[in-house]
Image 1 (cartoon, rainbow, N blue to C red):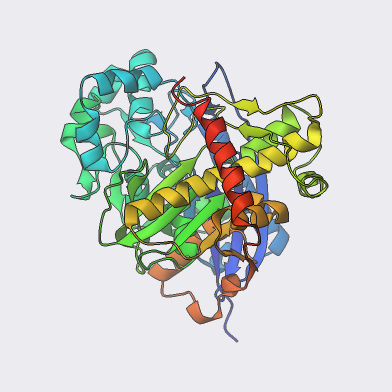
Image 2: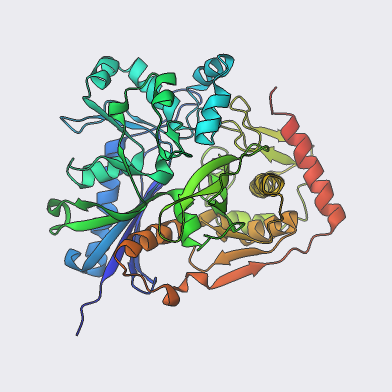
Length: 493
């Protein structure tokens, strides 16, 4: 009798790390999750402890093996997917980070971005990278670390330091320092990678004053990348899949044909539409980026990023104390007919696409004496839907063709109210897979593709719920108009 094999997916997110074991048919055998600490040392700053992130990855993998009693020898391969743009710099000799990781949400380099814009450099940067000049991306965070950590600049120039996003950091640690790599999807989020030539750009390194010796080698998202050292789990395990979280989710949905679009709702929300062999030059505040084709090789996509989605619900829970758990919001939102004109614009760390205003700050507008907690909670959910519609409208304008349906995944979209309200505001069908862990599924599929292990026809991920629009056009227009007025109050003020 043949011993079954498994694929391990490590999904390293912004607030926690998940490990999932899939079988060859794409079924989840078991999963484990662990949160880690968030640090906010100054207003607008967000940091993580990179070593804590690595320990969380080890912890959830060990928890999986303990729960399932599956031998590491039976894990055929591993796929890694990660929060993107978050910057780690470590010492090559010790393997220790020189400072806390600067998270993608961090806005500390806003002034640096302004200075570069004032020098007239944004157009050149965008032409090469498909991105805009914003603190969201990695390059200015990396430059900030070299300028502000004593001795870092000199060490970097001497080749003693290594840079990576979280994918690079995890592979480096899991391989016991033998492998310093990233994949095309993560490289395309750094502001240092020419997505047209598909290589690191010496010119961009010059603009940001960064030594090229810092940079990892770039690999395909589906190929033999490294081995997890045997000392961690008692047996070496291959890593053959790697992609940034949003590209991984796109691949998980099977969206490898132009026009196929998904939105993942996690801490933030990220809409991506696959454009294939063509890089679309956005005129509506979106980003051209690299995704994965059927075989895990680089292809192009358009992306829009919302900084606050699930994090908005966390804010209701942790800061305002309006709820005790996120699941309460669905019933509360359905208990009232509307928000009575209340809008929440959750620009707590600025606004992403299509507005790109790092100075914007959050606002509650339309408050009256009759406003209560239920209206604010519903407005928070509606804000996630409105921001998503902003992205989809921009995508349609850039691509020149309508997006017929939206595939959705992620924890926040389990909320039935949010899913239906989004379908109503979009006036489009929503497809929500029964399996919401599409980010992890994409990483598993990429890893298994390299090993010819995945049974494509048996994957259960395409079983789904559908949501169809039922809102009148007059109500939709009224809500959208109110939202746009609310956003105008916080943008570029």
